[in-house]
Length: 387
Image 1 (tube, rainbow, N blue to C red):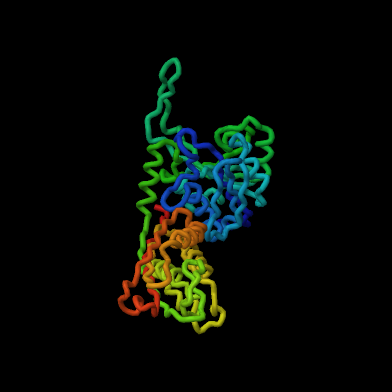
Image 2 (cartoon, rainbow, N blue to C red):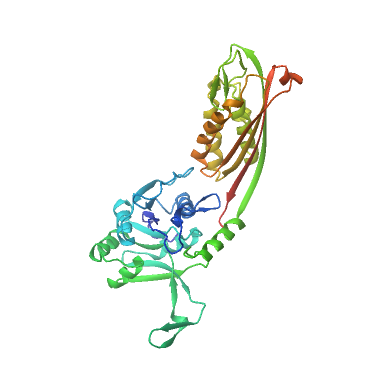
């Protein structure tokens, strides 16, 4: 940053459009990698916050549109605002909700925004001038009306977002131009004010057509990392203990012995996730030597593990669990166990998949003699880093 005092900044994410040009569901809610399209830009706002360059995220969504998923693992203060009938109305709603002196307004359909572009805009904007990223046209251009006219390519630039302005000044301009425009820079220039242009990036393209969507998916896959982990747990069956599996309590004369509630399914799933993410195991995170975990609800422990890996920017792709037990009869409750676990899982990783199976001990070994239960789990987690 330059030597001048740092202003406060709000990152306004414009995600209230219908996405009609690409068709189908609103594009900002389409899944790109492991997250909705809009979250990619929100991740950039998070990085700016961590760098001390941004104070809040204002996310503008359609009024009455699809439900908005909560942001998992974000530390940037975030406000969710209802959009208006036009872009200008939506942006105005965001400006009214923002608390900072300056704002960056970014299209949610540009998922590959870099923090470097934002920092350059922050340096360039001032009380008197807005700042925008631009790219010189690489194509020869023609203006076609009643005739065809060649345009000077070296003087034609494409405008990108985010666009940076002093908040109160931009709000005044929008109030005086209710008819709006395709971007805020147009209205800013129409008001006679100055714009500073900074270099944009080809990666900061807008997803508008089906081809753009294919390109975005290809770039997302290029930054994908996948990890797989295995989990295993075994607990003795004893009288006088409640039997809890996947957060569901069973009527049984025998229960699983353990320091916590001994929910073997949750333990195996948690260890698989921790193994994939390289974060140890549940014995390390929740040691039996610590009285805080005596009788602990293992569903809560599993939620803590899910939150931990979300903080590391991992998303759960799939968890596959196999319980091996002789008694009691579990088959008729496997759907209830699965639904209970899935509800917890998707609250943190909305696109995660889950499979839970139960196998008999076939009267073989300690499991077959109903002395214990065993549980095996495999987990796949994925992370999509900015390409």
